[in-house]
Length: 225
Image: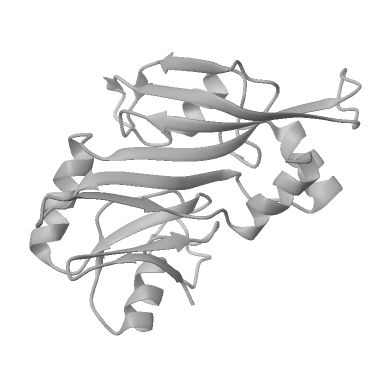
């Protein structure tokens, strides 16, 4: 059963588990379960996603019950009228706060402006040697992307040499291997924690929050947070 964290007559949001695809995709032929179909079956109603989050990212995934709300919310996401917050566990000790202004290239080669700001919430240093370091350092950050580029947070955090743990594409292979061997952890530690937007029909301010998934909580405990 999916955890439903918001619902009205136009919109519904779930707290998506890590590893669950939003919908069927030819690039993930191994998947047999999809958030879209699971939610439709669970509530017995047709819904359509209004935005995307990566398969390996957990947290808020928003759907619309009708075409009017779907189109309006898709427009709001495209025009950056939706405020998004994410939590991530990354390699190393990050600065207290930092703005990342680093354009990202689309698949067709076009560069797009991309801007992220983050705040460090916690830091940890574990007594585990890795490579030339006698200990392993990690940070919990709250990241706010003000643009919505594909894999923006993953690419931006990798760009500043603080990749997200469990990110196989843009992350650190040594860290990912350590987490697999030490703690049997393969989850990408990125969580969509908050959405804020004006309701597409009523116009009121909506704030949706999602609690951390069990895998993320387990690593928080490992870190002593």
